[in-house]
Amino acid sequence: MKFQIDVLGIFLKVVVRINKVTFAPLVVSTLFILLTSLLAHCARRLVQKTVKEPFVRLLLEEAIAAAELCGCCFELIVVADHFGVATYAIFLFVLTIWWSLNWGDATACPYTHIEDVIEGRGDVKKAFLKTWAELAGGLLVFKYVQTYWALEISETHKNKASEDCTADLQVPVLYGAMVEGIATCLCRLASRSLSDLNPRYATAIDSFIGTSLVVAGLLTRDTVYVYRYEDSSANADLSVSVFCKVHLGKAFDYSGGYFNPVLATSLKAGCEGHTLMEHALVYWLGACAGSIISVYVYKIPSIQKYVKGTTEVNGDSFWAEKED
Image (cartoon, rainbow, N blue to C red):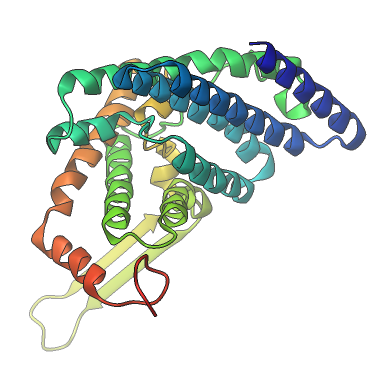
């Protein structure tokens, strides 16, 4: 405890000094994210050294991982709002790599435990307990974030601690659930493929794919795809005309693109714009359904043949355990 207080004191001194001299709110956000990661890292090491029972240790690690994830993402919202999607994407990409390297067996994501149950690697009781631990960590961390925001060290945090939140879901519930489900399914398929293919930079590739799915809608929110087909040849008995206009990115923009029920609950449950039932249907049922579908889609023979075929081909040094 004394160590954490000393770290927090040094952190605040550094932040205040930097902010007074340079007025750099981005540095304030960066240092807060670093502090959150440092405290989570220390808590994780403490648990690993003091808790001997493996499953209890894993539950605590899940809670710590969820708290770290949600705590950092609260600040990433500030980064995205004030410094743009590109800056947000860089932060998320680096953080995802950090989490992959440091969380160990913890995932901070409930649907991974459902996948384990389906594939016979876990049971329902343990899956429920892990989910409960993740929810506890994700919800409790808000008080920590709110305390920091209340200091208003940066202009970007002014009134942030007390402001009302608004939901990202601005489309019908079914549509939002489909977006979260499809994106989650794609994300899990990519992760499974990387796990089997074992490329040399699998962690970075997985992080890039996940980050791309999150920000894809934001980067293409004003892009409109138009397709027109017309068949009115002189010899045809029937004239056919097709016109299709799609607003790319709107789905991600309207659902938020969380792809993690605990993260969505920590950041947006109870916010104005949807009921708790609607929130559960979109961010829990939608994401979990997408994850479950990915388990069965990945077992399709054509996909398995492609993955196994790729691993047998001698590629370049990009792939692990392959020679040029």
